[in-house]
Length: 525
Image (cartoon, rainbow, N blue to C red; front, side):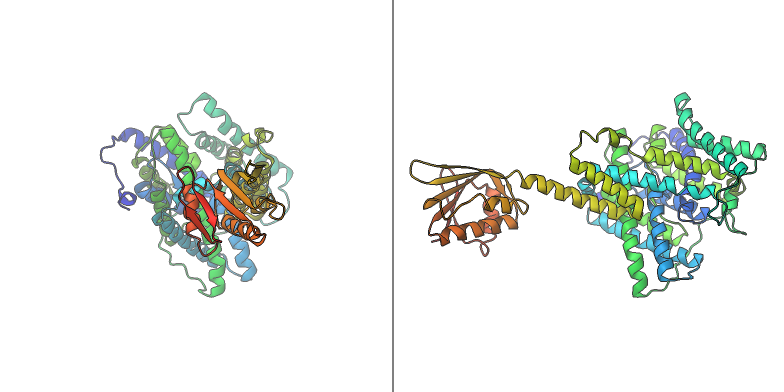
């Protein structure tokens, strides 16, 4: 437990210049993405910016991976789309301000669950997510982010496309943004290409006075980007059982998705820096940050792969870079609001298109023919579930379950038996493959108590009794032979299998005989 709260390594050498410059670059790159992600569920840009500030600051101070950046993310933002639809279905006529209160309390609950995950040291369970599930997860997420941008090409508040000229301007500026983001890294990586793209497109729009949609146009009348320190907000909701039953599932989803993305990002940064972060400490930091975010008017979030890579690529390895990014982001909110409102939406849409394209695992298509058909099916199903339901946690959970079932099915087919009768008339069954819940039926079908000789030996030298279902299968098998008046011996059971059988004395009635060559379990007669 001490390691969870051992925050600083005072022996670590910190390059202050690199950390501060890298933090400034990350702060600039955070602004457009925080705004864009906030707009996915229709929130005010300030909601995303406040979340980015709070998450970046707290996780940089308390997190388990120095150099990793957290903020408002698409993975969490898309979850609130489903929550908002659910709230509108249960509470017709609910006001936007009331919806935000439900969102904030959902983020707080999610933070509590994440802290519990860290205290209970559940961070290691990220290893149980199979690669096909991860492919499907990120592919579905990419599709959601991509589709969420299309409303920007429609007239505000309608389902009609923009008129021809505004549409072509919007499309052209979006493509220009994407080209810059794609092409600039081929020339230089000193400045984030996303930041340069937004600055160039914004300069063109403002300098040439191009009539196109801006961030200010997406907001309601009287709404502004200008803000101060994130205001304290105590969510005021209807604390009924119905409300809690709406909130809690989405809080669990936010917690799960946030931890999955954060822990995956942590693993990536570990590989790049050749160091090891603490997954459990990161869970606690993410939870703490989300609790503060919920009470400070933020939409919540998690680790950001893109910003984390920008930070580490610049050479940042300590906590100072993330702290600098958070502080500079707050400075932008307080003193740069007028510039933020002039940002053209085409630049943000282009950025989000590139985020979606970069998020999608195009390599997954290349391994289709190399992957087992069950893995391909799992990947496709997880992608579809994610894209259709917007429920990333359910999609990942479904994928893990499907992968586990596919694995169990493949192992169930591996159990087999080599049969022969020795010179003494004793029939031997040499079992190969694991005996567990999935293989018990095939195991039982291999025996013929009525026609077998009076004595039978079942050899488990190449097998293993794995679970309660296997014990029950052995119990039924011995009963079948006893009913036929015959003797059955279980041979070459491994020590853990014998322990499992001894612990289940009430289920299977056997003795363990010590033998100098091998151990035999013999039925009581």
